[in-house]
Length: 358
Ligand SMILES: *Cc1c(COP(=O)(O)O)cnc(C)c1O
Image 1: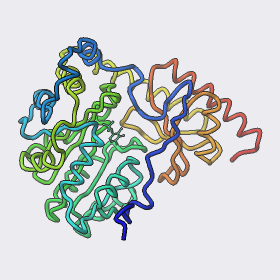
Image 2: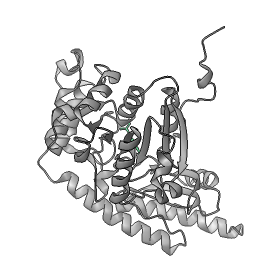
Image 3: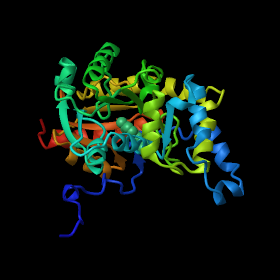
């Protein structure tokens, strides 16, 4: 009997969102103001050794930068090639035959495949149920619980008290709680520092979103030292390239106000864009991120995303979102780009009306 393909891989596909070239890509929540200048400067100053020598085994330069920025011990930090990689290592760290994961859905689209790649049995709990009764996430004593806060693709962030309760519950069931804070820079509260002293909590972050470094592939997580060590074991050495680690570290420890200004502007434009959408009868969900999720104009998100793409603008379509149904996710960026998006949206809306849409 052939061991290939793995039976549990048969229904697994390559990740394949629509990535055809488009004039304006608002589909992936990267920073549309560009990369952190300190990181760009470090990459431009690349030395021959940055390319021909191996990187540090465990990217200590990045680990130390994270520790310094957030005031935690370096032993509490683990890093990886993007936070996808950090999640992957974390999921693998809890693996044992029959290991189970529970996650609040809808959420980050890579979570279910990552669970599957790591042979975890994954179960989704709908967000409304999870919010009403956080016990739903731990009732069958899973090895791992994944919660994205603020959540992708909805943009919403449950109250800090809800997370506190979930931490308590996970402590009781011995489940490892993974809090994905990819968008926490745009939100009001974070549990990152708390994770340093909470043995069953891992908080994952990325350099891909607010810092504008998606191309570098750098992510990190904070956890109690014993937990961080277990994740580092399943991470393995040489995961982050020298230049990426150095550049992300430069961005994280930069003393300037670039990030602060980007976040302030992004929040302002998020509010402005939410008003523009509401005025068109497409009120978005309240967002604590750099994106907005709003109802698809025709009621069919995939069809609307394809039509917007023909008009030069890429958004991400989602189906079955609580309180929204079919929805479109748009990344917030510099206002001229938002105007270009609204122009395309208005063209779509007028088509939908002509066709006697909903
Ligand atoms: C974009 C995103 C990530 C991560 O990305 P990397 O580029 O792999 O660091 C992780 N979690 C969520 C929820 C995201 O939206």
